[in-house]
Image 1 (cartoon, rainbow, N blue to C red):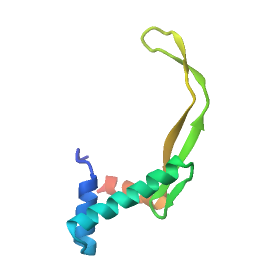
Image 2: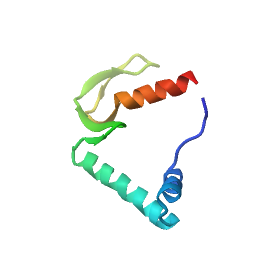
Image 3: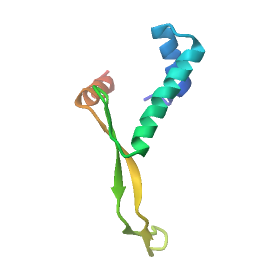
Amino acid sequence: MSESTLTRMDLAEAVFQEVGLSRNESADLVEAVLQHISDALVSGESVKISSFGTFSVRDKSERMGRNPKTGEEVPISPRRVLTFRPSHLMKDRVDAGNKS
C-alpha cells in the first residue's frame, strides 16, 4: 500500500486538469466545498455525498476510562465526534483495489 496522501492542492490540481478552471479558481472551488461541508457538520447536519459516503456528528456522553499505564480510572468528558460511513459503492471500489 502506498504511503502518499491526497491533499487540498492535489484536489485543486485535479479540478484544474478536469474542469479547466485556472489554478487559483480551482483552489478557491476546493476551499469553498470543504468550507461548506465543515459548516454543515459544525451546525449538526449530516453530509451525504452520493457514491462516496456520509459524514455525521455524534454526541458522546461522559464515561469512565482507564489509564493503561497506571490502571487508574478517569472520567472522559462528553464531546462531539465526527464519523464517516462509506457507501457500499466506495467499499466495493476500495476492496477491488486491494485485489489488484
